[in-house]
Image (cartoon, rainbow over all chains, first blue to last red; front, top):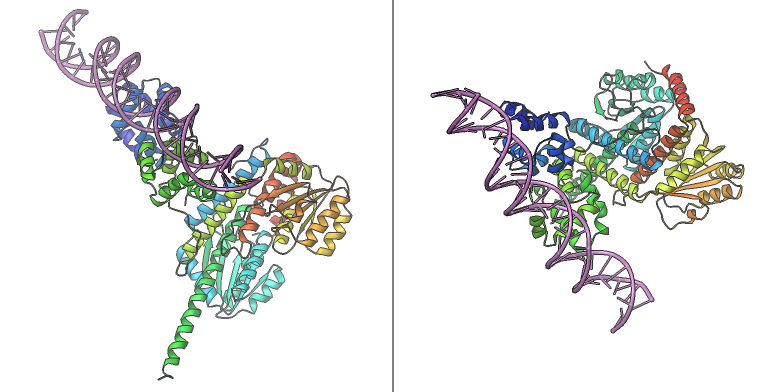
Length: 278
Length: 278
DNA sequence: CTGCAAATGAAAATTATTTTCAAAATGGAA
DNA sequence: TTCCATTTTGAAAATAATTTTCATTTGCAG
C-alpha cells in the first residue's frame, strides 16, 4: 500500500459523494488506473472528468496526469506475466520463460548479500584447492564453475558423484574452499560433503535458494538465490539461472581481483628493483 | 537498470540520428522525463514531437504517454551498464552480469521467429526419437534439453561425442527429430550430423547465433539466438543462456501440448527423487 | 549523379486535460 | 416547510498535450 492510498483514506471523509466514488474505484482496482484516460476513468466511476481532476488535486497532485505518474511510480506498474496457460503459443511461452528469468535475477539481486559475495570472492581468490559440489540440476553449474575458476587460474575441480564428493571433501584442508550448490539446500549428500569439508578446515560456501535448510549449518558463507517459485519451476530452471549468475559474478570478481594483485605485484617488484639502481 | 533502459540499448542501433538524441537524453537524465511534456522533451532533445512519439513506439509503447508511465513504474531508471571495470565490487559485478543476461534475452526475444518456434514445438511433440547434438559449450545445453524432454515423456538422447552423433544421426528416420545446438553454426561435426539426420528423413532443427552459417542448409527449422557480444563474453555465457531459454520454452510448449501425459511423468520423477532428500 | 527508401519535422487532426460556470444538491435558520 | 448561503457537481468551453499526416530532407546503393 503506497503513500497515496494512505492519503486517500485520510482525506476520504472530506470528499463529496462523487469524489468518494472515485476513491472507491481506485482502491478497488489498484494499478488499473494508470492505463486509463481521464474520460475512461470518469465513465468507470460514474462521474465527470472535473471530479477526477478535483480528486487528484485533493491528493496533492497538480492534476490527473501527475496522479497517474505518482501511482505508477508507487509500483502499480504493469505486472509481468509468467503464468503459462494451456493455449499459449510457443512464442508466448518463450516470453513468459524470459519474464520468469528476469524476475528471478532481479529478486536475487535484491536478496543477495553484497558482503557475502565479497567474502566468497576473497575466499576463492586466496584459496589453495577449490572443490565444487553439485548433484542433479546443480551438477552442471558446479562443472561450469570449475571450468571458469580454472580459466581464472585457480585450482578448481567439480564433483558430481556423491562418493567422489565425500572423498574430495575429506582431502581438503585449511586454506582450501568447498563450494556447494543446492537449490533446496537439503540434498543429503551435498550437506554431508560440505560438513566434512568444514571439519577438515576448509572455508565452506553454499549457494542455495532456501533460507531454512540444513546446508546453512556447515556453510561459512551463504549466497542466496531467489528463483521464482512458480508452479512450472519444477525443473529448477530459474534456480540454475540464478546460480549461474552468481558463479559468473564470482568468476569476474576473481579475474579482476587477481589482475589487480598481479599489477601490484609487478609494481612491488619494480620498486624493490629500484634499490639496485643508481 | 529497468527493462526499458535495456530495450533502449538494444534498439539503439536501429534508430536514426534524431531518435538517438532522444535515447541519449533519456539515458543522461534518468527520471527527469516523467515531469516533462512531449513539447518540452522535444525541445530538450532538439527534435520534433513526432520523433518522440516514434521513439516511444519503437520501445513498444502505444505512445509518449505510456512511455512516461512505464518509466515512472520502473522508478526513474538507472542506466544499464555491462562493462566491468577494475575496482568494481563483487556485487557491482553481479549487477553487470545480470544486465548482460537481460540484454541477451531481450535481444533474442526480438529476433526469435514465432513461426519457427511453433514448428519446432510441433515437430518435437510428434517425434518418435529425438537426438540432440552439441559440442563444447553447447554440449551441456544439449544434455539439458535431453533431460527435460525425457522428463516430459519424450524419447530424447543427447550426444556430445562426434562419433556418436554421426551414428545416432544415421539411425534416425522419418518422424524422428534431430536438434543441433551450435553458437557459431559452423562446427563441422554438428553440421555433418544434422545433414545426415536430414538425409535419413528426420526433421532437423538448429539453434544458432549466426545468421550466415553452414548449419542453416541442413536445418528444416532454425531458431536464432542473439547473445550479446561484449568483451567479457569469451566463455559463451550469454550464448548458453539464450540457448537455454529456447530449450525451456520448447520444453514448456511440449508439456502444455501433451499436458496430461507429461504432467504425470513429471510427478512420477519427482516422487522417485524424494528419497534423496531430508 | 540519380532514384529510392528511410528518417525527419511542420502542421493538422485528434485526443486528453483543465478550467469555467451554471445548475443541483446540501444544510441550517426562520 | 421555505429561503438563502454554501458546497458539490457536471456540461461544455478553453487549453494543452499527443498523435497522425504528409511534404521535405537525408543518406545511400547503383
